[in-house]
Length: 203
Image: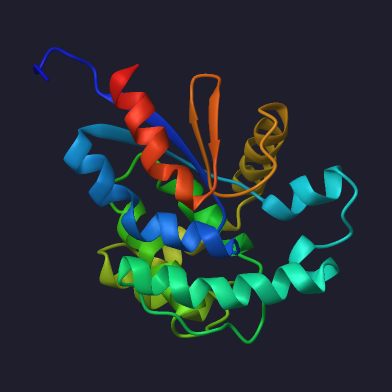
C-alpha cells in the first residue's frame, strides 16, 4: 500500500464487561497491524442496548444455560489464542468507568494497551474494573496522570459522550459485542474478526 493510500478502517464496537470482547481486544491490534488496517475504537454500554430490546439484565443472567455454555467455552477459546483465563467472581461485570476512560483515548496510542490491561484485570485477575484505585496503576504504567484521566472520565461531558456513543450503537443496529463495522457491513462476534478484516482489506 502506498503512503498516499488511505488505510482501510474497521470500527471496533466493544465492551469491557463483554466476555467475547476480551478475546478480540487482546488480539485486534496485532491483526490490524499485519494487515495495515486502522482500528476505530468504539467503546459502548452493551447493557443499555440489552435494556432497549427488553432484557432487564444481561442474557447471561437471564439465560442460565447460555451462561453455563459461555463459562465452558471461554477456557477453550483462551487456549486457542494463548490467553490466560480465570472465571470472574462477578459475571458479567460492569465496565462503566473504564469505558469512560477509553472514550478519552480512542485517538491516542495508549488505547490498545489500556484496553488489554483492563481485560486482564477482569478475566485473569478477577478485579473490579469499576474501582478507580484498580485502574489508576494501569494509567500510571502507560505514562498518564491517573488522577487527571479519572477526573476527566467522571466529568459530565464524558458521561454524555458515552450515552451518545451507545445511542449510535443502537442506531447502527448493534445488538452485541464485539461487533465490527465496515461502512454498513456488520460482523458480530470474536470469531468474525478475521472475516471483517478480510472484507475491509479487499473492499
